[in-house]
Length: 236
Image (cartoon, rainbow, N blue to C red):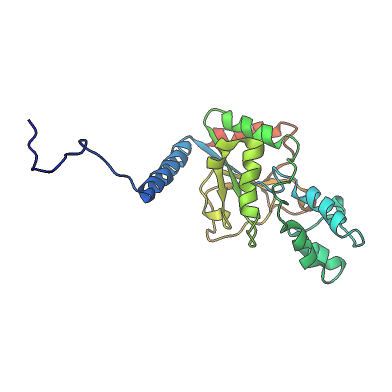
């Protein structure tokens, strides 16, 4: 028989009071365990968002013409630099802040149209045996809208489960993986030799660039990405 002091009402055995902070910590740790579990398979593929899955260039040009109909513009086939603002500044001094005013606007990243075949290809790639895919994208330095809207884009086009597969970082060299598919030809950061091999996704501006022996992925629609992934799997 359980003995109690006079006037003392025992509570249920092993009663645990969880504070709001504890609940948040448990949720955070569960998310981290989920990512760690996802990363246990062999081939880790990192895929950039803007210019690889989402049509940044085409969307910008449409918005530029609407916002500044009387200003000069650069046709897609004439693009030559990674940073749009740098090339527009060569057209006329003072265009750089105007360029930024377009892609720093609320809704710009959320409304980016997907590049043909990208979403289906990435979903299929993630279903391949021994392959795990993560979105790896850099938010703007002016991140007020871009960071949040990148997550919204991923959820809308890939599904809510892909939020746990999305990495936003200003330095991709510190992210572990076997492959990074990215349109930026020169990716620099804190790590001189990243763990991943850079595969350049072809964009209008980088078609004529020297990619120094790196592999190229020309398109999602032609299915060539499958051979690329199989080749990397064989080399593991």
